[in-house]
Amino acid sequence: MVKSVEGICRNGKVELLESLAEAEGSRVVVTWVHPAAPVDLRERGIDESQAADLRHRLAPFAEDWDRPEMAAYDELPTR
Image 1 (cartoon, helix red, strand yellow):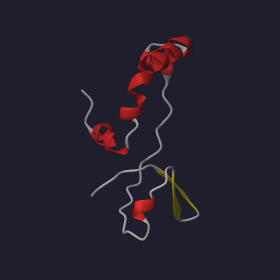
Image 2 (tube, rainbow, N blue to C red):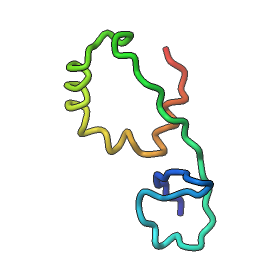
Image 3 (cartoon, rainbow, N blue to C red):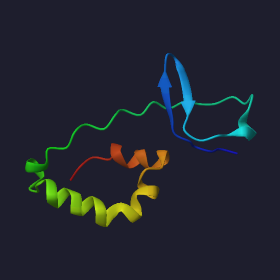
């Protein structure tokens, strides 16, 4: 079985953000994810209030978008 969970690397150790009791003693593969770069809102043609409104309206999708496996889409070329 393969399961992805998010974690944080501190002092050379990975701290999982959710408990995985069933994985105790198991081998793991760690994929490092680059931190997101800040977004220049003016470059995108919106201001802070418009960005806040957009975040609010898109919040129902956040759980799916924030899954680690969705990072593959970040690597796609822009059009």
